[in-house]
Length: 345
Image (tube, rainbow, N blue to C red):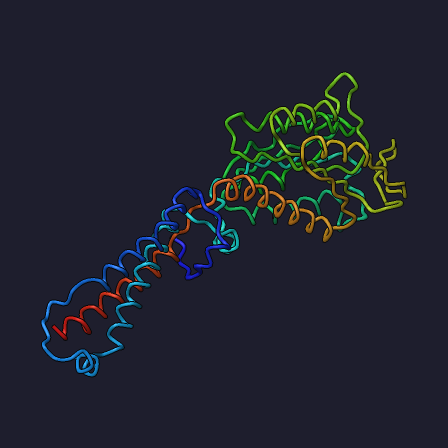
């Protein structure tokens, strides 16, 4: 239970506000107790004059009884506030977030020949692998899978909590055994199917590519895969990889592979549309450090979504402050009655 001492009730919201109507009865009950206390006849008969009685009387005892009566009222109000199940957003935001439910994530990485471009160090693919492994290292309860694609796509690793396997597969992926091209729709479609219907509440695909879609027109188109992702409540974060302008890219000829300066072409409008359709976001990574920041931003966005859907939809009642003060005042009143009034009997 979260412990705090804030009883500024106007800052709280209440799950059971109907209990607050009892507050109206507190002053009425206190008034009748006060009248009863003052009209009650004393238990000790005194035959002297009234002036003599007042002279030997103690005013502070009367004031103390009145103060006790007020404290009884405050205790009653505190207990009523506690029964109304108060909660306070500011206090709740300070608690440790519990992400034990985790996220299902499939990293979908373009491994086509253009990912060997050297505008990243040593090239786009190796930089993307390094940052992806750092991202995996930062997870604790998320199932992570890996899909690689070029002209076709394959599942390198289904979603798992065994992060060592995921990182091994990240190191191993390449486009050496895949047909040429950049089949974004194939990669995204396969990633979505890897996220089972019984997956965790938050399902995410991180789609990374450095080019235009060049898949077989008879296969899944990128926007068709986005429709599938939306139907399965999968958010897609798209990342366009590549510097602005030109970059040294590999070109395969009959005389071998050589590098030449070529324009960087990324279909950003399509990637933005895929992200927008699925509730995700599009990012542009122009270097490795920028790509690292993008992964961190995705992590923040996903945690915020979990907080919005889990924490803020069902915040816990927090009556601790009201109960704490009620207990302290009750002990104080009991001590006063026992030590002061009992000693005078």
